[in-house]
Length: 212
Image (cartoon, rainbow, N blue to C red; front, side, top):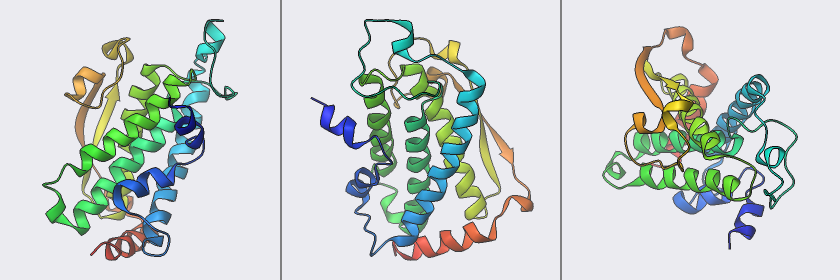
């Protein structure tokens, strides 16, 4: 029943994020560019981690797994779609919070996180990933999204996140609950002024103006 949705999410699923926030190229070009920045960062970082971990895909471990889509040639862990999606969720949540603080009371971040979870879980349903890949992608993607926000919005700190796959276990991933239940611990990490990126700050400011 998810096949059409899974197929449509093989590439960066901008339309799904647009459905939550009403993002359009005409009204929100800088928001879309900011999303492209965080997605590009996520792609590059996750590729290096996949190379280091070299975790086999499900189809490589069992002939009973019959993926819905062609299995990518790179390793499984951490999930690329999960990393990109949770990075986008963190970025968009922070952007809207800065531009429209009156929306903080609404469950916006929860909705964004649920969409990221859905996109990542679809890759598990398709037979390409394990729930563990989603959990690791959640930890990595959220960290990358927060880092981009800190660089762009002149933040003073971000959360340093450590992921323990054994603590996560073999259960299905859920974004609900405390971070420890998903195998992650958080500690505040101070940033220096050198972390600020002028180009990102200009892009951030332009994106905020699109929402006020």
